[in-house]
Length: 130
Image (cartoon, rainbow, N blue to C red; front, side):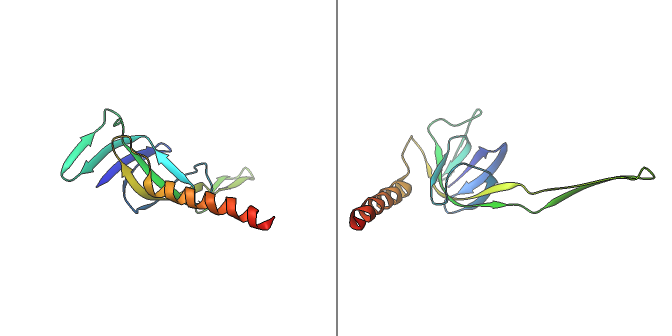
């Protein structure tokens, strides 16, 4: 089973447990993100195409880390004018691990379990400190 999602103006073919690098997304590492713009999904030989999007299908993922791309140098020189300009740029990216593809308006299963476990641990930690 795989899906084609759209995020950051680009399209990505994703399946469960894929790790993709996308344009910067909000969220801390370990948090859950959902991609609502699903363009295509395949499931056991059947394929659904959106026009342009498929309703009720979402893709859930987990933020792994925030990173930066390679440095790109833009150098301009105008000959015989004593004019030079050098600029560098590093694009910000977010690395996301796809956890599951949800059809029919389902809620993420694994991410919800992780959040409740993490929330329970956070609540227990201050209680023992007091």
